[in-house]
Image (cartoon, rainbow, N blue to C red; front, side, top):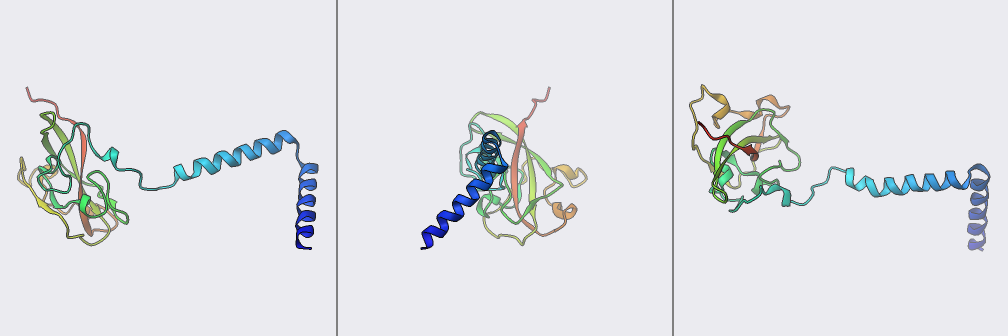
Length: 174
């Protein structure tokens, strides 16, 4: 008995739809719906694979303080706190202010500009502490000093960890 009601309802809905729309209109709407259904997951803010975090020719362990990118870092490594060398962990935001370092990639022997950004918003993760001061200058050159509270410009000033984003190859001094 229930199948007859379902069949009758489906037939009524189909007839009503057929009266109100043409085949072309129906096909275009189904196409838009299918495209949206396929594209929606690609637009959601989801953590994708971490292969893009590695810079071409990198070697070494991003969870180690000896990793080449961390030559001027100070804090907890985001790689150990749910993020990566490039990205803050979920629930944190990258600091609006940063300090810059120049580190040599041992894989290709070139120097690269590295932007160090604290990830702000939650308490320190307290894993993989790293404090290196290679090429650090006194605090009067704030952009190269790693001992300043860099989350001060963010909504939350709590520091969780630090990322080391490769900005590009450094120009050789002449």
